[in-house]
Length: 216
Image 1 (cartoon, rainbow, N blue to C red):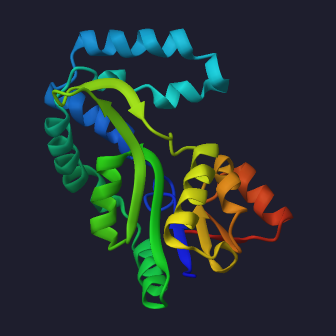
Image 2 (image 1 turned 90 degrees about the vertical axis):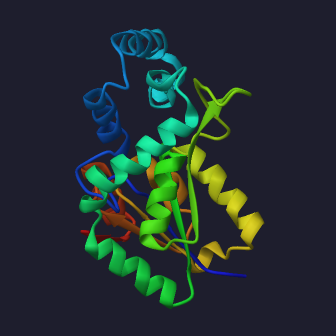
């Protein structure tokens, strides 16, 4: 069996910014998002805000509905290069390199869009990158929904279980790095959970359970 080091991205590898929020503003500045797109996004937001304990809000990708997927991927690459890569923590990169050199499989697991995770994967020299997949139709147009497991909160735990089966990972010898309490579900699956740039609730939980707490 192999050992893995599983890293969250937003707030962990990058601090104080959300990659998708930065992308949203980027699209607004470039004129790719119209007033009609914003109205549709808001309509879906308020219609579903009380559903699934608010989790649907994070699954709402209707600001991208009817956009060409390949054009969005291209915009994501540009946004990553211009607006996000400068915020990647050097300490996080050092930690990733150290673990990779020690024989750990590096996994990036995030609720952000999959094309963003792919950018992070290449930049960080990770082995596996998993994010949220956009649903597209047979013409390559984004529907506004997501495809497959939403890699947020409990969804991350499901994905980790899938990775264990696929790659024969020994979780008892593996690491998990994250910054929010919602990530506890997958963090406590590993032998070495590490709270990074921890939110107050995660910091408290980590102290109670004697987890390592670090700043990147």
